[in-house]
Length: 404
Image 1 (cartoon, rainbow, N blue to C red):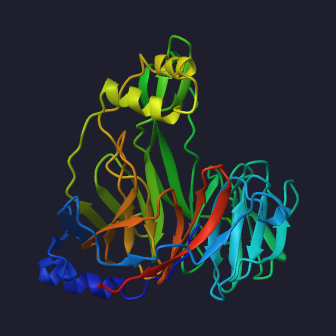
Image 2: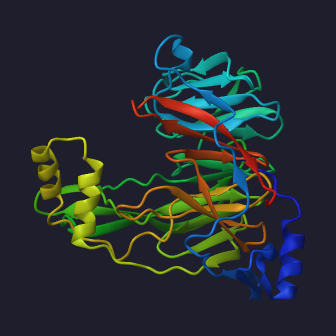
Image 3: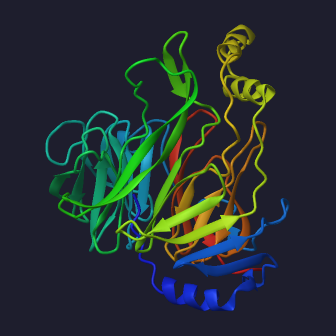
């Protein structure tokens, strides 16, 4: 869950729309921003594959929270999210223990709250899915399985627990005015009648709710993730190359869509589409060799016999029409869009396309290997990483936005 205030977004958009085609902040990349029936559309060319934006990420983290053994407060397991408070404290959503853990700016543990349970301020097993700043100086945390969220003060004291309105399970983010961006869960339930076979997809519903949990408006249904279904054994599993839903809070807009193509759509909270950001993208259809390579890499630590068995399990799996156009998106505190490039089989590294608040492409930026990015501030990146022994750490990396 993220809450970022984006001031000046619309003034920037208006001036760029009037300007039309422009080179993006001296990056040399072509961006065309135009208006179409009240929708601002930014069309961008793709940066050169070997190019990098001039912003710099430090060579090592300034803070690393985690431990192999010792004080249990530092032993992290299944970190779902983390957020940095204005005073430098970091709150970690440790889903493995259903706890929120707070650390000071030096990484020292300050306190733990939450825990597994059904009471106020507690979280169901595996349900703690996000943490973020609440309007004012409070903190909110989402419990997906219990269809609710809790609000705590800046020191961890529980304030209230609020149920999400039907049919929503997930609190995606909090808008600047305190409204809630909510959605249904991307899970597959076989329909009544004949069991499906091949690549199947379900629709997800999104909406806006008031801070007290009451429904406010619907944002309609949008494509969910793709699943691989087998009518022969009546099984279903997430497809390895699934095209999936993408969503975020972008200022006072919400982003909803799917990564079938390189297009990011932003809506007003009443459901009106008002902004579209596009980037050139060469779609590629997966092959059977791609699927086998993916499975072999994923299970590379198994024996040859076990790995071959895993490959055999997907021998008849249907292929998606194309690889996803990108992975996840993040919106940083100043309002820039970060779109993670999709890594096709055999590709490594985490590369992001960065767009300015008006949707103009700035270039590629590579984040530290293995870092799952939770939050991007004006001068930091907050995320989690596993070491070679699968020990989990939450890390803060310095970010310098000035070109060298």
